[in-house]
Image (cartoon, rainbow, N blue to C red; front, side):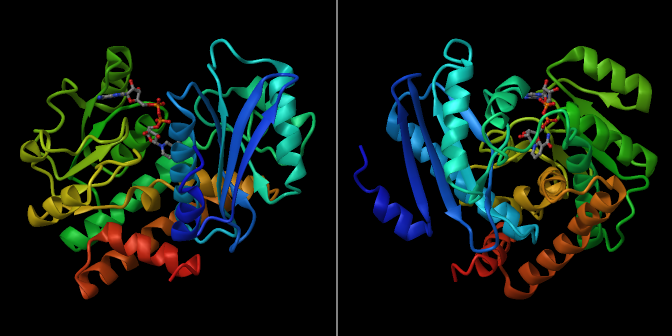
Length: 345
Ligand code: NAD
C-alpha cells in the first residue's frame, strides 16, 4: 500500500506522513504535513469512508499540499497539512475516537493545527479540544464565510480592473452560481456596489429569498452558464468549467469561491484562448483561511481581519500583471508565487 509514497513525498516536498492506528477505539487515521517552512502546518481534518486506504492517502496528500500553496499565496505565517479519519461519519463516530485522534495531534507539539472539514461537526471538535490545544474552530471563533465572501468581492474588483481598466462593478452583470453561505454574502457586496445579479441554486427557497431581497434575476442551474454576463462567479461545487460548459460561457471573467473550478490545465488554456480571465481559486477564496489564521493568533478584531482579507485585491492585481508580463496562465503564476515562498523553487 505504501509503495511509492516516499518518492511522492520527495517529489512534492512533503515533510511527514503519519499513519495512526488505535485498536481500543478502532481509530484508523492519517496526518500529512506538507510544509512547515513558513510556520506550523494548518489544515482541517475530514472523516470519510474511502474506497481504499490508497484513496484516503492520495486525497490527504493532495489536500495538505493545497493548504501549503493557499497559505503561502495568502502570505500567512503557516504551512499546509491535513488529517483524515477513515470511517463513516454517520455510523462510526464516538467520543473515544476523536479523543484518541486529538492525542495524536497533541503529540505533534504544535507542528500541526487542525479544524473542521467534511464529515466533522462542532461536537467532534469539542472532543478533540478536551485533549489538545491544537484544534481551532467551532462556535467560539465564528464563521469564515463572511470573510471568504468579502475576499471574493475584492478579488472580482481586481479582475474588473485587469479586464475593463477600472475596478468598479457598477452596472456590471454578475452571474452567481450557488447562493449558499458565501454566495449570498457575495451577492450583497455586489448589489451594494451597483452590480446586476443573475443567480441560480439547487435550493429554490434560497433563490426566491435572495431574488426578493436583492432584486436579482433567477435562472435554473443549467441556464447559469449561458447568461449574457460580464462575470461568472462559481460559488457552489468544483469542476463546473468543463468541455460541456465552456462553449456556453459568454463572460469576460470567472472569479468565485468554489475550489477546483476546472480540473485540467487544458481547460485553463482554453479559457485564455477564449479571452476569459480566470482568478485562481485558492488566491481569491483565501478570506476564510486568513480569518481562521488570525483567530488562531488570537485576533478578535474583525475590522483588522477584513483589512488583511482586502489585500486579496492587490495580490490578484500583481498576479495578473506578472501573468501578462511573463505570458503565463494566472493559475501557473499563482503556483510559482506559492512555490517561491515555500522554497520549493
Ligand atoms: P454552501 O454549502 O453554504 O453553499 C453552496 C450552495 O450551492 C448551496 O446553496 C447549494 O444548494 C448550491 N449548489 C450546489 N450545487 C449547485 C449547482 N450545481 N448549481 C447551483 N447551486 C448549487 O457552501 P459555501 O460555504 O457557500 O461554499 C461555496 C463554495 O466555496 C464551496 O465550493 C466551498 O468549498 C468554497 N469555499 C468556501 C469557503 C467558506 O468560507 N465557506 C472558503 C473557501 C472555499
